[in-house]
Length: 324
View (cartoon, rainbow, N blue to C red):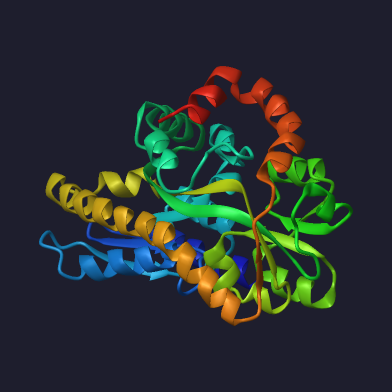
């Protein structure tokens, strides 16, 4: 409620002023990511770089959920109260269903090469166009949310059988729910900010996240058993208000695009290089790291792929999986 009140106040102030939250010179960004997470770092870097803008651009960032959760942030961008945000495809799919194809389990063989072949190539351009048509937002780029892994309070997950009946927190999207139910867990949607307490009290038995989130949110303190399942690769899509971007001059847009491309590369590189460091740190904190039998997880979630092939198209899914 606090977050929604802040977001509502922002919108009300803008309506009273009769103008957008940003001018052609001042940009704003909002996100939910904690300190140390690559998207947080990337937006901080973008704002810092724009302090020395040659065309008069500047940026203010509202981090760590100051305007609400990711769906709240999307709404603020659509209203024009915030210029841009970065959100998981699972949340963006509520506004742009086409984004949901990237939430399918075991879609990519890795999290540092294949996803960018897809997002930066013809498939990514096609999906971006669909997202823009469905949501009215402008897709600025594709950032990384890393590969996601399972962690539990008491069990080293080596096979799907180890998740049997485990109340597992997931993002509240149909694909996430179907995937973990297919693995035998009891998929439990829950706001991200409630996960630590839910693990501490035993409200849930397990959850899933990338290694950066697992480390930075200190989930290892309550759920020290991390299994490198890599069941999802999470795109963090950067979307913006199209009308706000249209106010930029050609020179301003060119400068922004150049800096944004450099920040995007850095954001992706952080996820690619952070895993090893995260795992070493987590071991020092008493977490156990398990290498599961992924073939068993892939087999268990095959019905999920088959189900959503009817939604997104079998050819599209195969083209993503085979991209090299």
